[in-house]
Length: 84
Image (cartoon, rainbow, N blue to C red):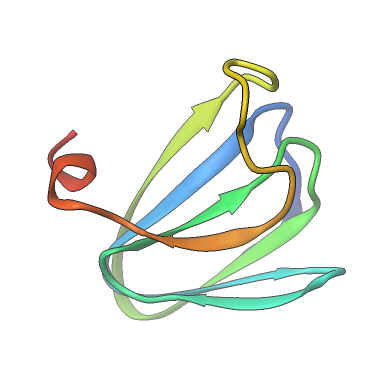
């Protein structure tokens, strides 16, 4: 369990193996394998791992490129993204 915290950059939290639960004041999301959670910069969140979990995160500067999501969301990860 990772207690409530926030980042100055947006986070793409990718679950490689196992299931991750992300909780914010807006709700709770389940991130299964081959998916990722987009967490916008400044969003307070906690992370709970169910069982054996392997995950990676990419941190993105706010406004790095146009069109980044402004809200929380779970997204599918393609083979190309997984390889990167």
